[in-house]
Length: 78
Image (cartoon, rainbow, N blue to C red; front, side, top):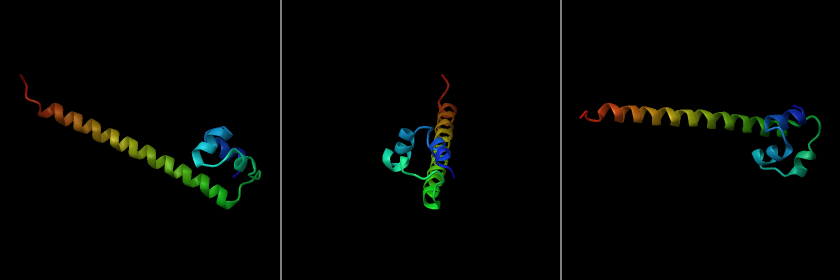
């Protein structure tokens, strides 16, 4: 993976990339043009974690909506 690809994946800027994976600007600027397997692995783990967060958020939203529908169905009609 190229350094520019990694930065784009992590938010598009060095600042956003730093925040995403908890590194300093200097560390990211020091990356070689082609990342080592260890550096690439760190990016891939971040991508996996982001996907898991999205799935978990969607699951929580679905549960919340199901609970709301259930409450409406069990409320007595006046």
